[in-house]
Amino acid sequence: MTIANSKKSSRELQAFNLLFYPERYPGLVKREPDNIKFLLWHNNVLGDYTSWSLFVLDTQYYVRRICWKQYTPYKLATPQTYGAENIFSKEVSTSIIEKFSSFELDNFKNKSKIPLISIDSSEFGILANPYKIHWMNEPPQELVELASWHKNTIAQFEALFS
Image 1 (spheres, one colour):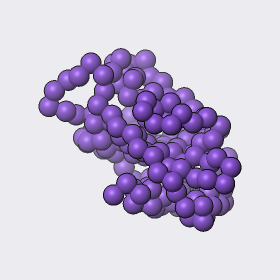
Image 2: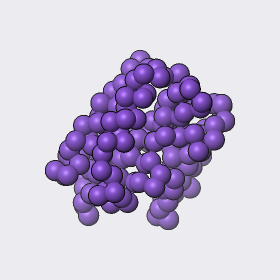
Image 3: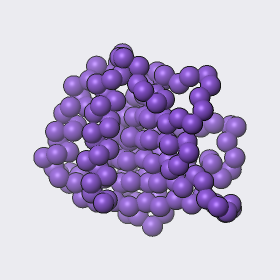
Image 4: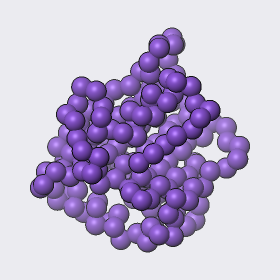
């Protein structure tokens, strides 16, 4: 999974590396990239940038949440992030994966629905090799069902960390 943008500052690039390569997050158990089933993200441009990853190891499922506090009252040399991981129900994970697998993703492969100019918005996305799908604010009509799955899955993941 690759997210790169040469216009980003060093601090932002560090944050993106933590958000989009969660298997390497410092202080958490090292995981293999091949064990990531998918990664979801939500960037509230006026708040936090968060990613959630579902890892599958044999018959055990884990959700890893990485959050970047984009705006702090002070600037640090490194981004202010935190990460956490929890075991996730096999039954619920299987259901989420089956629903995700039911989408005809080839229609959206490496497509994005990002406007040229956007102010005070939110970005949402899914990375599941080889797919990268993202949109701003309200999803376009062809992504409504997938966006609903995205929202519901994040709500289930967030319940682990509440």
